Length: 170
Image 1 (cartoon, rainbow, N blue to C red):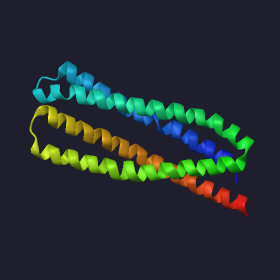
Image 2 (cartoon, rainbow, N blue to C red):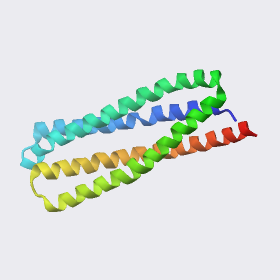
Image 3 (cartoon, rainbow, N blue to C red):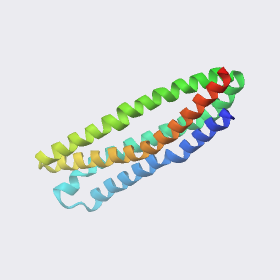
Image 4 (cartoon, rainbow, N blue to C red):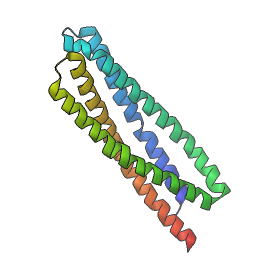
C-alpha cells in the first residue's frame, strides 16, 4: 500500500472541497450586498450585518483550510521520505484527533447551536434577532454539509493509515 499516495490524494481532495466554504461565503457576502442595496423592510435591512459576518467567516475558514492543506502536500513527501513509520504514527494521531473534533464540534456542537437558534427564533420577533438566528442556522448548516463530506474522507484516510501501520508492525 502506498500511504504517501493516499495522504497526497486526501490532501488534494481537501483542496477541491475547501473552496466550497469560500463559495458559500461569497454567496452570503452577495446576499449582504443585496440586502444593503435593495432591502426596504426592517427585516431585510437587519440581514445586512449577519450575512456579512457569516460570509466573512466562511471565506476565512475556506482560505485557512485551503492554504493549510496545500502546504501539507509538499510536507507529506518530506516527512514520509525522512521516516515513514514516524509519518504514519503522526498522521494517525492527527487524523484521530480530527475525527474526535468532528464528533464533538461538528456533529454535536453545531446541531445543538442550531437547535438553540431555532428555540430563540420561536420566542423573539425583533428583526435583528430573527435575521441573526436565521443566518446562523444557514451558516452552520452549510458548515455541517461541507464538514460531513470532509469527515467521510478523513475517516477513509484514517482507515488506510491503520492498515499501513498494521503492515509495518507485522
